[in-house]
Amino acid sequence: MSGKTQGNTFRLEVLKARGNGVVTTIENISANATIADLKKQVAQKKPKLYPDRQSYRNEPTGKSVKDTQKLSELNVDKTGKIYFKDLGPQIGWSTVFMAEYAGPLVIYLLFYIRPSIIYGSSASSKPMHLAAHLGAACWTFHYAKRILETIFVHRFSHSTMPIFNLFKNCGYYWGFTAMVAYFVNHPKYTPPLFGSAQVFLGLAIFLINELGNLSIHLLLRNLRPPGTTERRIPYPNKTNPFTNLFHFVSCPNYTYEVGSWLGFSLMTQTLTAFLFTIAGTVQMTVWAKQKHRAYKKDFADKYPKQRKSIIPFII
Amino acid sequence: MTITDNAVLIEVLSKTSVTINLYASVIIFVFGVVGNTLNIFVLTQRTLRSAQHSIGILLAVTAWSITEIIRYGYYALNLFQTSPQLLTWCRYSFFIVLYPLGVTGELVTIVKAMRTIYPESVRNRYSILLPNKLNFGFDYFYFLVVVLLAYTYFPTMFKHMFTQRAKTLNPSSSSKKVN
Image (cartoon, rainbow over all chains, first blue to last red; front, top):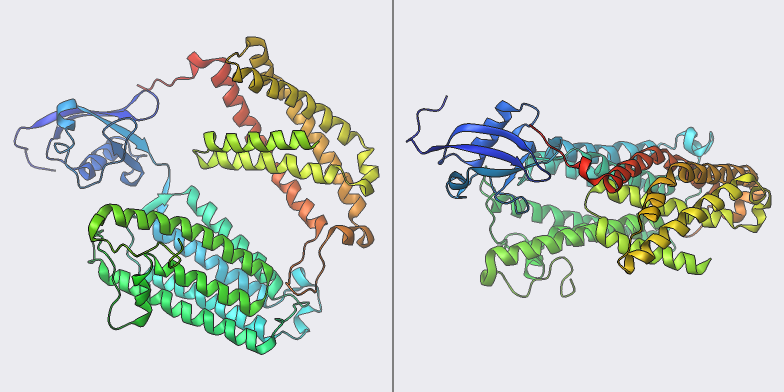
């Protein structure tokens, strides 16, 4: 139980941002209370609305306010009103990542063993080209790396996301995995046009870009002090040459990811792998542009001007 | 046919810029467009003559033609700032009968087309076969299986239209008051 406040308590009406209606009324809340405190109190009165589902704003249509803001800073103690948005059922950010990455691991390997249900009864005894073996190895490596990074490397800004995203993201990753794995592991797979040279070139490109991607993730982790959501401008460091890509782009981790998948597509010469590369590139370009805009807005003149968002000199 | 296709495309584009807010709207919208467009390809194949002579085509084309006449009439008049009560009522009520009829017509046609293309000799004309340099295959029969599965979204879409009907025809009763 919190101790008695200094006497600057007030009555707060929590109103729906959309439509009319009162969510609840808090009789005595301190002007010094933060949004995080408000969320806890509302959750006590309305157990279905756990804090991660709650989002507040000063006006019915406006930007959401941060958890750390005090009610007095937002002038809510003067108006006695605040507007609430229900973000819907939430699920842990890490949970979603694990589910969406575990699928590709399992599904690709299921196709790799050439089950008779998919390829017919004699398929598993037919010879498999080196490119298909390497494809399975690279795919597995990529998603195992992602899972390990989710557990040990990444520091997330948000703790939850809407549960709908789970189905959307899993549909995307699992669906594309099936589409790529089906053709690379097919008994009628055609090896690349330029043979071993193409296979090993693709493999090298893949591995180099995976290393680059990991380097950026490690740099970004070390940039952010543990337990905070503080943002700083990332710069190349002296120890890892892969980080030099920061001279040219805001999101080199995405750049390297695009490179990895281009390498994979070259190595396997499979159209669906290339389509997957395109889809990922489009999505990552959208994210990179958002992040780039956020950086420029947060850091203004201090932010390096020659940087693009994802592809050096281009976009 | 092409003028209608262009009008559909323009309408699709303008609808996109206005209504994409919630993910649910996007999915409903995409399914509606994809469903109708794909049917144009299925329904007009000359080799699927037996399917074209089925009742499915008659049902689908009749239902959708009436729907489109009302809908585009409504949009056209909207451009002139008028929205006659009767036409609005028709637009938001006729669908109750026309949509199930139209969807049934489409399903009947697709199933008949699937039965026609099932044998290898016909199917291979509409498919991309392995092996090939790009390691890409496309089996039209299984593609139609997926299209059929997409129709499982129809009940949700249909319910959504009833909500829109309530909002448009009874605007006063749809605002929520919570105590």
